[in-house]
Length: 326
Image (cartoon, rainbow, N blue to C red; front, side):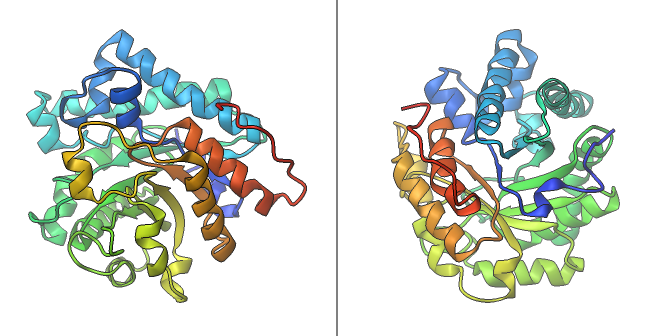
């Protein structure tokens, strides 16, 4: 059922974008009250489902405008068993929510994909606990058992890969990779870091990537960094083999720490052009990083600014134009 599972086009080094911060967009721009930050819960309601469809169409239109690929990340960051139980979903209902989230993306791909804009479907896996806090940790085996049901569901759908977002300690990452390997699913691990460039667990990004690779025989297709401002982690990206394993960035526009973001009552959406310039600097240093998107507080304005800043590095004759959303 998967179109790209055996060959994922972002591995060919063409530029791919992702969406921005789905949950913060739905809450602060669309006026939805998301229980426990769970976007998948909206799929139960026609108006909520339509809002999510419209959200994705915005990024599909943007990708078509700039003739780049797009990774469609499913609205399932919270759709695992602990969060699902808290929201009142039993096992079968939770599995169906994960299936419906992928089916929505499959329908969009069938209608919207073009030769210049390949659309890759990713089943999003979130952490069992708080993405900002690594106080509670599972063992590698415990993490594998915990994440298996969601990944098993994705393996039966049109999802091309799974992407684990906002992972903050290495044992959970290893468990997710092993669960994906058990079901033959390509997997990406996206770590989050604090303002010092280290995971919330205190481990450096380099040692975390090296430990996961060693424990899983380089199981992840590649790694990403998400939910941190580029100024938090840029200095951590030093020369070394581990940097070559990082292919994607989904940064925040806000420079606030995780603790500050947790306490914030208003959205800090930073400055799209400034964020774009940070991405341009990173692309100049690390041209192999070709999956570019946003996280908390970002929206289509930020992703367009990233396109404007980074496409001239890919296409030397790309002509700057005013932002469509300006």
